[in-house]
Length: 297
Image 1: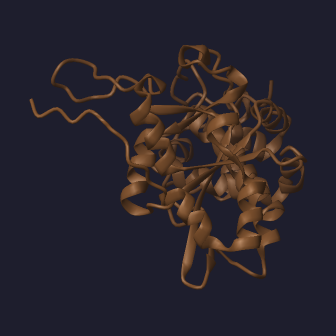
Image 2 (image 1 turned 45 degrees about the vertical axis):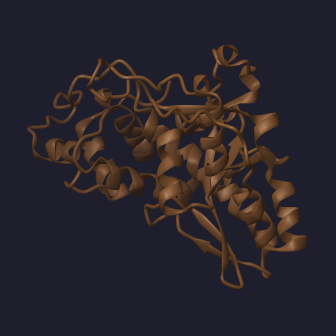
């Protein structure tokens, strides 16, 4: 079940924060350090927990595994012909860019690890359905029009990662529990610090969880939006809370078919190796003339 930070001795919790380098910019750390902690008693200053863990934090571990596996196992094969630019620490749409002769194929690496059991509502099978954020895809078209999403598709990875993380004790175990339940001001920078330390100490173990046979699939932001336009039902969150509010009632994901609407990364890599970047960009920018509704009234 892992460590429960609420049951840990307060001194252990403070030592964990100090050991990993979490400062008081994270509001929870400041609260713990500034409170009247009594040695030998459970931590009493933590807020009540919500109903579920912070999935966005836990997904950082899975996402980092995907980025590292893709960089080491796949992008490295394209060197030295191509320059590989690393963007994923700059907080933008791109994680990596494959560059040559003034051209770039921009890439955002993702991990699809949650089985969508209601995929049948879109005419898809759960094992053949992954979500792409429509908001992020639309934003990408405005900033990085040629962006390609590369998804590590492995519906067993989430469970395997949680198993490893929940096996940690000491500072890493205590903070895994803390970050899984508590956020607040300064949490993102503190989480990044923690994830960095986890991979410094246990990167090889976590990297080994990524499937040995390539499971990376590619789809451009342009194609994601084309799927949305052709089949709005693939985006079940595309609705509003109430008339006139303009607020979405759910996370707005476009659900795509892995088999029929994404391309194996190995195929993209082969085209890059044989033909260069431009033919890949041509596939992303491809246009066809079609009749579409264009009502005047």
